Length: 289
Image (cartoon, rainbow, N blue to C red; front, top):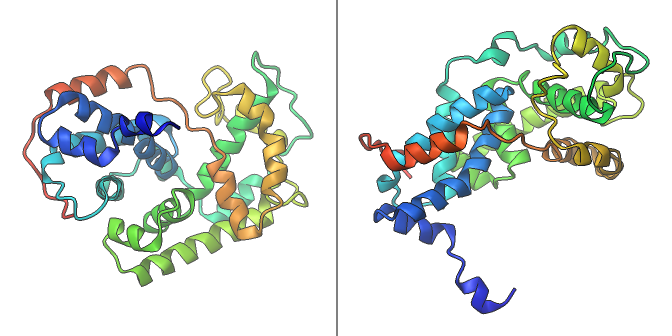
């Protein structure tokens, strides 16, 4: 890219400085720069897109109304992730957590209702149904982890924060974070390598074999898919899966999670966000970074 063009693109930290000084467009730029990252963490933590959207709204309100308290002692996104983490860890249990399985219960569930192929006729492509099962099922596996381990895994393996930054975000020591991440990684890896056909082709479970059961049990609504939004990405996944399977075991799982397409927030989200940016004014809370 031409140096003159590059110099005209404001970095996030510069936009934050302008936003703190009251520049409305800079505030909009800051919020739009972080909203996808925040939503991605919330979705992986809570499973359901609507719950993730609600949490994202709460997090962004805190970011906007407390921006004046950002002192620059860490990176801005580190500060944002701390607000997000504090918010998510203190939320009341949402719909998926209220019914979440243990790993043993999940294993029993996966062993039942396996059909040989997709037999229920729907008005959407089979690839989208497979994508819906894949994302919904693998995200549900994260819900088997206790909250602190789930968040450590999301930040360390999927978002790929380094141990120092992740420990700062979670307000724990680096040694504690490494321990939490190691335990979470081992539990997810052990389960997926022994049960998931995506990670290990020797396993019986396949997304295609789970579609009929998922529709019958109401876990998938073909007329209202929660996760699968891109037919092209769904069709390209088998090629991507071949590449994922070539990675070492510990990297396969994280690569699979990072391959998920993040659904677009609802149509009401953008107007709401614009309204909040222009109108929200609440007392400042110090998040300590």
